[in-house]
Length: 113
Length: 113
Image (cartoon, rainbow over all chains, first blue to last red; front, side, top):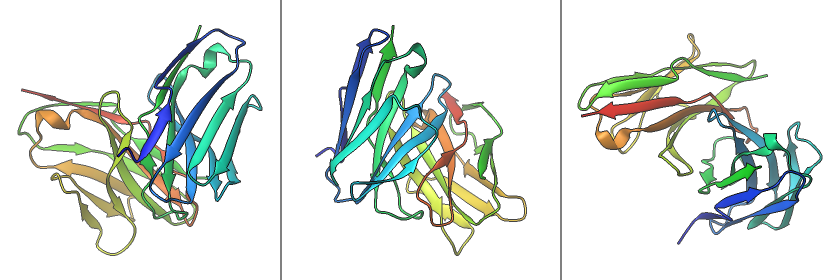
């Protein structure tokens, strides 16, 4: 059983398109996250949801809109894709606490042409 | 604000040799410390973490890290590496009670036969 799953695994699209990435966790956690890993492998948090409520929103362009329909799902919609959005996007989940281990999904590799 | 510095971007080492991956952090509040590992084309997995108590923490696969408050460091060590340890290693902190991971830039450990 996959603990944190993401779809799709790969996404190749043209500039200006809109795309979505889905994430699901079956660990019973109450907090989910989106991280972006750039081409130099640098990882940065984008968003975090706790019990479907947005609790962390780093300085991310408005073109990125997360949605959490329930505690087990966190989706990321990206409007008007730009070349600089090309990256690997990781979903993660944990219980709500700075001490808790975050469990990461396998990543979605987005390439914007 | 918090920041994490991983002093080596790449560490090449021969199989069965010891290795140390260095990590320093900066924070005006207390932090929890983590090491995550990313194998090629995979998500991140927790290797070990320091929350409180003994400053030396160990993982199940032979890695250990020591928290040094005066030097604000959390270096990762292994006395004898295997080819299978080849991966990207990320040091991270969560500031106080907040559950967002702040990552260093990563260290690529390359183990050669």
